[in-house]
Image (cartoon, rainbow, N blue to C red; front, top):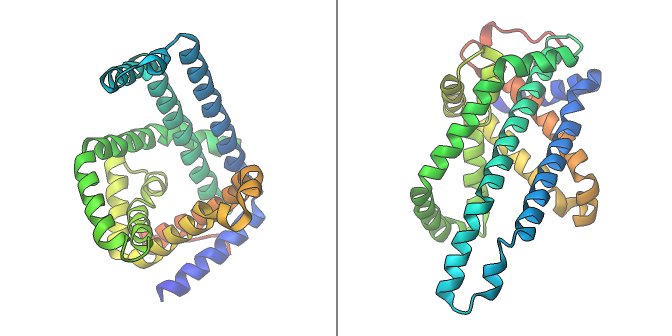
Length: 270
């Protein structure tokens, strides 16, 4: 039953994207985001090189001096790292909530426009930004635990299974947090409520969200293996972006179908 429902959602995703091409606008915005981040990183690297930040590394005669010089380089470039990270979070949050707002509008049978994109950013960006920041902070603070658990998992499961264990773990974690941004936009939830809704949906309906997460890893994460590195470098962002939008629409439909209030929600577009 769940597989048939998911196939219906994929079919509906194709129909929605075919009818409303505006849902693909975030593909180009994501490319612009990567260009901006790349420019900021190049500027930071050039500035650091010009100021002699890395000079001590090349003149270190002992290992102790090299380590002290290496640690000393993090202080002057720390501001650049934090700046790039904040810019990434802001741009990612804007594109994420704007994209979901366009998808929500298209599914309701309304032609998406700039008004819907900006409206979604105005209402939900702060919630998604804070949620992404909280998730990153929790992962950072629990790094020792994740490192030990990941090491044990790698030795006991990932190596014996030829890497499939690592893919399973990544897919499972992706499934847990697959719909938290969708929940915030669709049901106007807070940050923690959206994360809880995503975890609850994954707990009760793991099969469809796990399969969507798995397809995301295979079709986007391994696109370079399918197309070759050169083709992926020049066109992967576009093809991968199209697939990402199709999966995002299917994710939205899956959330609407299985969320707590899903039985009372109607999908207008057939």
